[in-house]
Every structure is written in C-alpha cells, then in structure tokens.
Image (cartoon, rainbow, N blue to C red):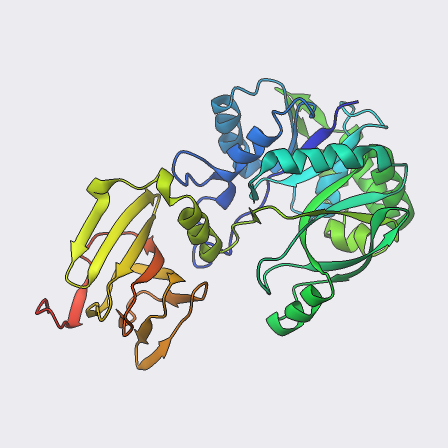
Length: 400
C-alpha cells in the first residue's frame, strides 16, 4: 500500500512578518520561481506516495489551488478547518476522511519546510514502513548543524534495532542545546509517520474528547470540489492542542528516523538567507552586481516586499554611516568578522551570526581585517531602492 502524504498548510508565518498581518504566509511566498508549498508537492509526486491530502483553512484555499494547478496535480483532497485548534485536531481530521484506508501509512508534512537530498529522505521513509504497527509513531530527526534555540530536540536509545525516543526537549536555550547535542540529540522536524489505525488508537486512548468531536465534524462534513468542509459546530468543541502535546508527550511508543540532510523550516530570515547563500549560483547574474568604493553588492532576488542581497566588503572597506526610512534589514555573516555600528553601539560579529537593523536605525559595516567580509542581507519594506539612504558619514565623500 502506498504512503499517504498529509500536508499541514494552515500556518501564518508570523515569525517572518512579526509586525503585520497583511503579508503572505511563508509557505506561499515566491522565493524565486518556487514556494515552500510547491517544493512539498514536488516531494510527494514520487511513486512512493498516494495522492495528497491538504489540511488548511478558508484563508489559503485560493493560494493552494493555484499552486496545485501549477504543479499539474489533479487528484487531491483538501480538508478545511472551520477554526484554528492547533495541529492535534488538524492531523486527526485529515486522517479520518473516508479516502484513507485504516491500515494505510500516513506521513504528515509541514508545507513550510525545505528539505534537500529528497531521495535520501524517501529511502529512509520506505525503509521504516515495515516497522509501522497499530500503535507506534515514527518522528523524523535532523542532525543539528549548530546549537539552536529555535527547534525542539529529542534523545534516543537503541531498542529492537530501532531508535526509541526517550526524552523531548522543547526549544532549549543555546547552552542547553549544546549539551543535548553532545548527548546525541537531534532536532525534532515535526514530521510524523504512522498508520491511520495507530493515529486513531492513540487519540482514542489519550484524547478521547478530541477524537469524538473531530470524528463528528468529519461525519457531518460536506464534500464539494475535492474539498471537505468540516462541521463547525462539532469541530469548535475541540480544545486547542498540538499533536506533540496531545499525543507525543503521552505515548511511550515513539521511534525516530535520524537524517543527516539539509533541512529548514525557514522560520527566520537567517535560514532563508543561508538557503540563498548555498544556492546563490542559481540566482547570480553579472548585470545585478554593483561595485562600490568599499566593495560590491549583488541583488540575488526581489520578492514581494523583500530583497535578497550579498554584500562583499573588501579589506579596510567601510560603508557609510546611514539609515533608511522605508525598510529594515536582516544580516547574516558568511565570511570574515565585520565591525558593526548600530545606533550608539559598536561590536563585531562572526560567521553564521545575525543582526537585525530596525527601520530608522543608524548603522554601518566596517571590515577592519585583511580578508574580505561577506554578508547576506534581506531588506524588508515598502521601498527597496538605493535612494532610501540617508548618509551621515562616509570616508569616500558620499554624504547626502
């Protein structure tokens, strides 16, 4: 039996756009001819998978159907949540629809994850399929590349040739994360793999009320144009619980599939910038390289209210002391150790460290060293042009 992909596509992406509700959810942002939701659809077009089920809400159904059409996916089902009740009810309702046989393996994928080395990912899924039963759950772990306070972690031990999960750590600080990694901890990717039967059994045992309310919302749902409209009266009776809290923290029968592949939920501009840095050859055009006395910058991609750039600061190069009226900026250092001025503070940052430049903040980059500095930059705002610069000091005589 093929594996059924269920794509969770109801998130708002507020970590990218914390100050406004008007911007597009990150799974639908065009990052240069691709979206995260589109990448997810590409992954499940593999013969390993059955046609997809997509869990979302009324706000995103138009975006979803546009991208489904773009990828020529004609067979699918959408499950519309009438209210936000977190991932617990969303996952259960998607699995309870009649399209899915009781014994079918299900893989729950977030629509806003970026997974590279997809073939390796699919091989591990297929290898683990034979271990699924009526009660166990597999979660996917990613080998950490750095201690991060943005992700949850888990610890495992070997049991019956499987990686049995013994403990979860929910977004520890960086010091604790470092210790967890030393003990063999992996990032919790939020990807779940289990049978429909196991999902039902776990909800019946640990979350009986959520199971009954969600089941009733599916039974009373209406199917129209490949879309299940869940019954609102039944669904809103659910308490708001994540799948992690509702099930994973309660059951003891959890195994891990450990992966060492590039992965990100692109939940921050740092992750987005590093993704562009790894793949900048795809976006690099000579006509978009601009030379300045301090070095050069390259415009890699201009999206909806954001611009991705790479700055190259030559040894002893100094950008002007400046501010912007219409944009803020996120920087990630990829090479060298620049000296940063931010309002009245002066400090240095190292590779992979980040800094946020608020709109209107006075700032400057200097390269005091003898080797070039490289910085990836995301500009966010309504005007993303070089005309939005007020210079206060400039060693090259370019003061406004």
